[in-house]
Length: 199
Image (tube, rainbow, N blue to C red):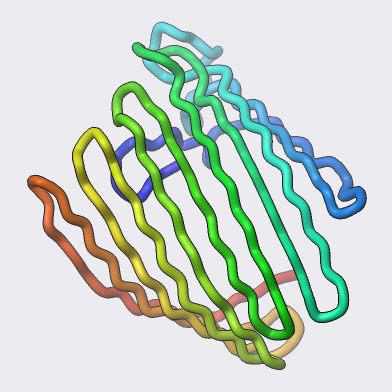
């Protein structure tokens, strides 16, 4: 995971892992993952002496339900980044909620990363989306805070998409982000666009 205010990164998204997702039952689904070593393409047996964390694992659950024009979603997840480095194992805990009615969806999420080296890093985000026919527009915000560096980050995104056909959409976003701390004061804009293909 890469948080919004720190250089701490576990790179578990690129590391080899084993994951299993249960079938959805009555709206519930559970997922578990095991990561032997938190390093991409490090083709050696797990070795706690090399400073790379080993034996990381995560578990998460989500619930989805819809009735008439209403929809509801909830999720929770936990990850332990394993051993192999000095100090306690970093742990990550996150929650999310979403509510929908008609073409509107409102969602929010909270994340807490506890790490002996990077301190306690908290972030939360919220967003709203409106969708009507082939057009969708969304606005999102995320805030992050790092105890070890006393840095705070804010980011905003305005996005839109238009469906050209099944699985093909034109997408675009405008971003603004800023970061402030005792030795940091930066901000910037970004504009991106493209075509999204899904199968």
